[in-house]
Length: 256
Image 1 (tube, rainbow, N blue to C red):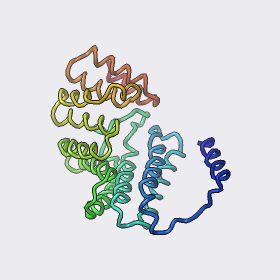
Image 2: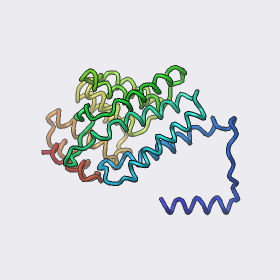
Image 3: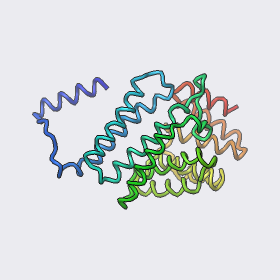
Image 4: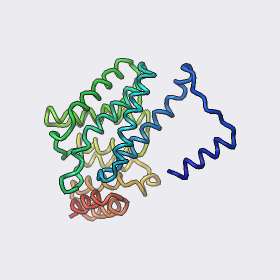
């Protein structure tokens, strides 16, 4: 990160780029880049699942603060509300992501009592405001998926058909590898592991060689289908691509 900052400063200096506060009319055309930057910062902080580095949590909180500042500047932009809703829903679950011993806890097995209801309620409010503008976007759909997961704290269940529907809409807007893998996982829960595996198989093989979530999801589906040799191979691929020791231990236990 330090090297990137040095290169950026050098580029600004050599090109003679002036620091200018953009005019209000210029904000909309810059919005997508700003949203992506804020979410990237949140993602860096969120990736510190072990919680051992306070800087990670500080960065996530800073990203949420930036989201709120952006909302003050552009309160009528649906995707600003959507991004803030997404970050709040994710941050609400921070305390439940690890067990007392540091064990990784997947979302579907987390203790809802450890989720922050105030953050969830705030996120729901922003999601509702985003919907009122009638302009659906990527961050709103991602927040809607997290909202369905959050409903488990009240109902005790997960509406996988709703999650599958939101992922299907998200693929049309942002057909990333992560989105397609998430869609396949939702299909497996809603329609069965065979259907989920078919959705995974539709992803091009050139895209998935180094993508750890794909192999973890694939291993789980194959295991459910009783295809043990293929499941073990997928688990080995996922374990080999995992950097977090707790996640690696979780996969090793699931592998059996």
